[in-house]
Length: 87
Image 1 (cartoon, rainbow, N blue to C red):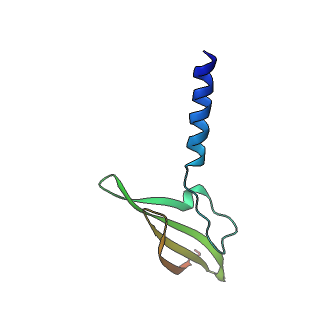
Image 2: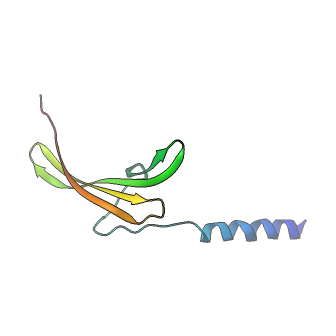
């Protein structure tokens, strides 16, 4: 019983070491919902990251959209100005 428990702990710890990680330059923080997969017929083709950069004007925010391939290599980066309508 002890050998089974130790083998489960061993293989479980190996799994944590094999996880992919991503470090993005000039990003102080991003939420999990900011990083989403791009799916095509249920298959992950890449990922996108959308996050706030700065207040652009009184009615607009500056956002950065980054596109990554399936291997987490950045392919595109676009800065967007999103205008907020005030009613």
